[in-house]
Image (cartoon, rainbow, N blue to C red; front, top):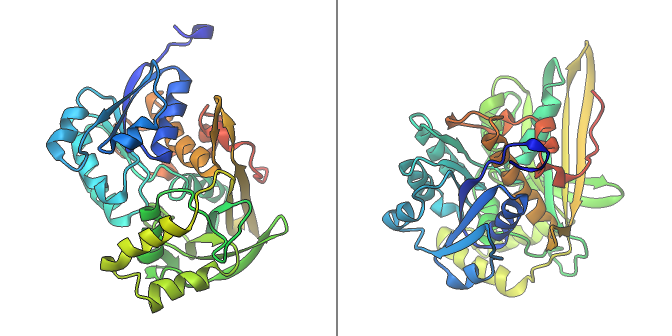
Length: 375
């Protein structure tokens, strides 16, 4: 029994991917005291960077090999994919084969559709897109949506940015380069004038200010998660846009369109350019801005959720804002599942998680106290 007489749920969880986010998930779960964590990666150098302890172990495994992956996942309660998006389907298949719950962080739309099909016959819970965007931003948006009698417009804006931009892009690497490129290159889902449609990435650039700081926001892929499917026929307009400092979109459009780095065969070159030219930073800020307008009590109203999450130390470990929000989100969803607050089988959407339950969770609490309008 844990302190206070509460039952301790010791669950074995496998994390696939030992990068910045995967290692942060391991640290948060291990620090909670009631999860036993196994981190898998084929890169031994990456595994050596994972802080091990009584509740964290590592194992080198070729996660692209289905047989090797299934062998490594035997006996686990849940699998969290923090691997590149192109491995999502293989990891989901292996999790189901081993009878484990499955969670991931992918922004890739096609991978999520594959997971959704798997869930139709799954005996465990499949919960994709558990990060920041997609992920938490859908939870926040749906909380606002629940407050309206009829919804007109839903706008989601998220930026993971350096606090101190020092280059023309106004950007430093803060998370997966492959995921970033995928968001910039793939079609974007939206609802426009009541019609579900696809829009072009990096287009529809708008300017906005939050707390006196100027940003631009433009279409990127995957940030809505399953909201288009959930809200089709229920809202007039729904869109997601990534926030950057002004000037970023114009440079990226020149690189992707004029230099043809958008083409699948040339995206590896773009990855090399990013990773060779843009330094990483721990001094970042995650900006979340969600606005919903519609009718309540016969009046046209607007509610807005805003939040900024900065890098800080948690459990003796310095974590960036994107590590806190992404890892904290998937840990919170896993925790809610473990404690019976989410369905234990089938496909679970992010909007099935209520914002109060998320923020009251020990991992969701890392988001702090956001600016949320009163009910």
